[in-house]
Structure formats: C-alpha cells, structure tokens
Length: 171
Image (cartoon, rainbow, N blue to C red; front, side, top):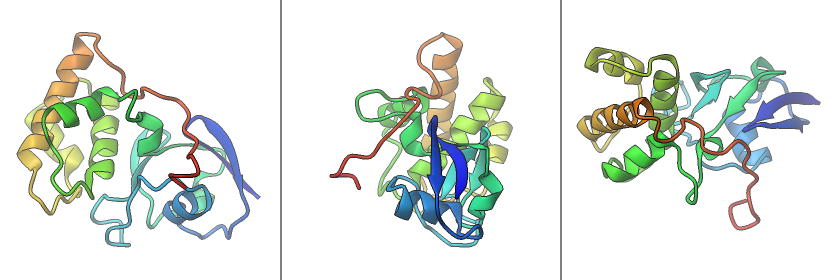
C-alpha cells in the first residue's frame, strides 16, 4: 500500500509504484478534474500541487509522492467555495473549452504561493509549458494579476477548501 495526503486527507492506494499519479487520482480515487493531455509532461493539463509545487503528474510515478502532500483542482475550491484564483478565472471569463484550465489554475496557484506579486515576466516563466489550445493567454495573465491584487487586499485564499470527496455523481 502506498500512502500520501490528497487534498488534506490521508489516502492509501494499492497500485503499482510506477503508476502515474494522474491515473491513480483519476481512476482509483475518482477525482476527474486533472486532465490527460500529452502523456509526456509537456502540456500542463495534468498538473497538481505536490508539496506546493506545480507538478506534471502524467509522468510522475505515484511512488514519488509517498508521504507527501498532493492537491488537485478539487482541493483548491468547489462551485460553492472558490479559491481566489478560481474566482479570478470566472470573473475574467478565462476558459473557452476549459480542458487545460485545471492545470493552468494549479500553476497559477503555485506561482502566487511563492510570489504573491508577480511581474509579467514572472507569470510568463511560471506558466510556460501550460498549453492553451484556445489561446486565452492574455486572459490567464490578467486573471493571475487580479488574483494577486485580491490576495494583497486580503480578499480570498489560494486554497478555499481543504478536503474534497467525490460524490457518486462525480465518480
């Protein structure tokens, strides 16, 4: 059995140690927010926070997160309680198709956790490799700036919820 913390909750999975974390979370733990994009860690759709760092999980073996803290998009917020980044995304109408957005939000959250007042260059560097086929990059950058401004004013949190359990409907 492999153990790690997922969205604030200790979890235990009985899978091969080399199974990518993305598939453990999606198929075994039934959290479907993180997406499969390229399978090579190049597009960012599969990003999750591992100990606060945006990490490509389609190529990360689950053994690499033993005794570590993993946060998925579901662990940042939900439709009733959104994180400051999720709220900025909504307010700025960032998504079009939405497929890449969980990875984009995860990377933006990691950026703001480590750098609460990023420059344009900081945003570009942190978000590089997160591919948006719809080309919403200007709205993504604006939403990150809006989230940073909200945080500076004490409005909102980077992680609005601390545990998420899928319902039967979501599973």
